[in-house]
Length: 326
Image (cartoon, rainbow, N blue to C red):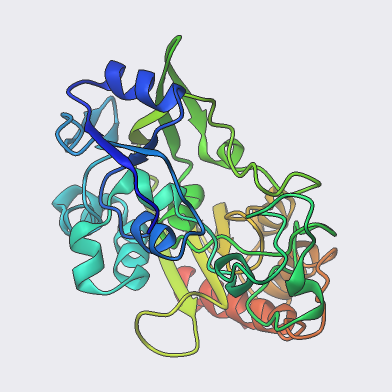
């Protein structure tokens, strides 16, 4: 591991200043330390924010404010989350081993890097790790890679389960910047790769994530399903988070988010709109999948994700609507 300086920030403002000067923020370190050991990331300075007062889970209007340093375990176990946002609790419990959930933080979970093997291998070309070098995944082993939202420069997927559930819930990210506080809806927080895959979010130099903001509980059927190669400690091939409210036999509201399909947690309002105002049925669910996957394209090894996503969406919608598909 490359030598580095370590400082501990006593305030958010000092964390802002250190990050603006080039320091990399560390909290739980469950992803960053692995990347540093492999020298995929080799920061000159780390700024530790674990002593900041960002471990709250508190009411915020009709919703909930979750501090950036709340661990994944504590968030999944919190009574309000389990009762009012069960899709989030389910996604967190599907996300990693218990040991990792005990250490990983809410803010860090949002910012974890892709698990593309070519990103981790310094001997391989990777535009995300080293801009302009190429993308070895395009002609390599790519069964885990994106079928939506990718580009000729990068086909990696985002690994977070938590972010998928937060997207379906309509969460926002609270950020402390050098010019003050701001909030960004999660669906605007991540950037697609385009020709700059190394720029993954809209964060600016010096920004520190301070909290996640959850809107008022939406009720309805809430389901998180993660299809993976093994039952534990594996990243999603396809995952679906659904929040669906049915009244009088008709879908009144539907929010869907997807993992494993794109370089960021994916949401398609057009696919949701197909469902609203209609009675649940297998034909309706297939129509929503048609809209979702209209522009999906594999690159060989990941072609199977397209029919897998179709089947997973149908299963999730059937469960979320109380088994109403027919």
